[in-house]
Image: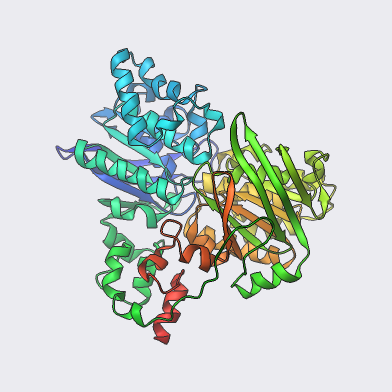
Length: 559
């Protein structure tokens, strides 16, 4: 063990109770004090399990068989429980709502310190520091339950930092954050890493956000063998799970392989000026009218298809806080509308009003032309499928196959095994059909929840951050599945911060701010003209109107 090593895995393998294959196989590696390490890999490859080995949740709370050793700050995690490691290791879960124990934000930040007997004056100082560090001072008196998913994620990070651990473990900390909030959180982690020497081990699928912050990468393979460990550039050259700029660099054989937009600009600065300029007729959103759609398919759907979902001047408040303000929106049959905006802008509230979980204070919601105000939620659910941010809320059966059977029975649908098997295969879940849904990884549970809702073939599908926990391959599977369902007439409304998915799949994008729709247009119009909600390729070819790797390759070949 190196003198500066703070985490050491020695031939570590782990298998969950009753699992047919191990989650981790023969891992031997060291993480040195003050390193910023990024853990990546396909959904279900053992990333969360790896992190839980470091803070002792595996095996103390998970059960199962642990072979080998995990040494953290000199302590063997098999003989030291998570409570003993808490002053050394901070942990931020994928699902922040799972770790909250109090009702108010400021109380939540103080809770862990109170349990450790931190003096009141010290607690107050630390609370103020983390409120400022994470930019959440305005949330201090808010009920935790009233926060958006992204706001909850930042509060969870602040709670962990308040304990001033030597090591901070974060499981997909930016998965529910808008682009600007993600940058703010990662910049804060950089400062802690650079200035205070905090050791950071972070798991994330959105490599375009985080790869530039990492000193080393660990690529997990689950039961398929030990991980790949190396510098970001070395590892990116060897694997397929790469961010768009790196994927473009591989396709065009750029050397050295770029990892960031800044590194990629040296290859495109001259050629970008010769690319065709974008066209835009982007307009502010105004009531029920829609701006023109440049995507030909989207335009055809919007102009010729019947309306699947309509909101007419919908408003809603939580206490004295306005969440929606006179929202008017139409979604056509077969159309894919992406809903974007900063955390807390009203995206989730809009979806909940559309499915009847929330009755708006004013305005009307029409599903297939019928006002749903006096309808029961189960009546609306016959036509509208809703997958919330927390997929576990939908999963309760003993197996994934039983989840689908329950949905079909509930809707009175007599469908054979073939339809369910085809759906599971389309989402990459066929090998997990007999698995207990709550034992799945977050990304697998996300897809399982989607399957359990869509098996009933709703005519409108509402998705709230559905790419949480999904790697690039499974995002592609989701895109392909949605396209097939849309061709059959399903309308899709997706609240998301995933600009890369929107650029590839959406017909239309609406941008929300403070409960209002401020912009409505095609992905090229909305993303192409945004400094914040923009793809890596658009940033790389600034002003050229290119959004995806495919756009860039085609344009550069033409040029």
